[in-house]
Image (cartoon, rainbow, N blue to C red):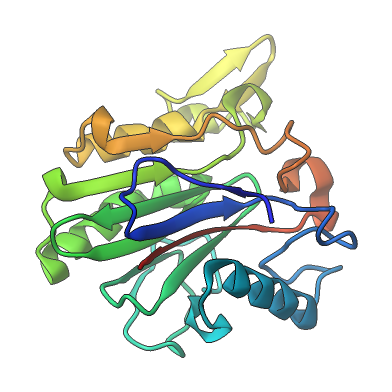
Length: 238
């Protein structure tokens, strides 16, 4: 399978973004979320193939039902699912998975306390600053320190292709651009700014420049609408 792998994490971290892989999964491409066209059996098959790729059991792959919230879940048990958009764990047996198709996945590793987190930050999550909430919980529960964190920002919709309504000027005044008579939202710069406001330096952050809307090897809801699958951004400790 083709997987985009971050370079910022050390070798003890397994992480990446599974691309569409249409050659490997010719029906709908690799997908990690149920849609009109993609059922639970299809997702299970994709999960089994990813587990084989990572040399782990499929039961170790933790997915969440994402609802564009700022709900953060600390994962202690493999059956511990709920409506949430961020997960944190210090268990080496768990592989945290974030489903994306234009939204941002933020993967975090605490290099000293051995804690990982996966965050789903679409514009609603960014508006709620789910990144800060997740990092705050890492600090409170696991004693994480900002200077020990490494972060990866996944492929997502690039600003010049992410057209939004005029109301975004009020929601994200510093990250919404007026080009001609249309408005465009820069979610990557908004999330990056939130990470910097938490105290992270740029050398602690890796940002993918890939655009999900124009890159046909990536799933995009903006491009494919209800036919779009979902990529998996994953992280686990080896």
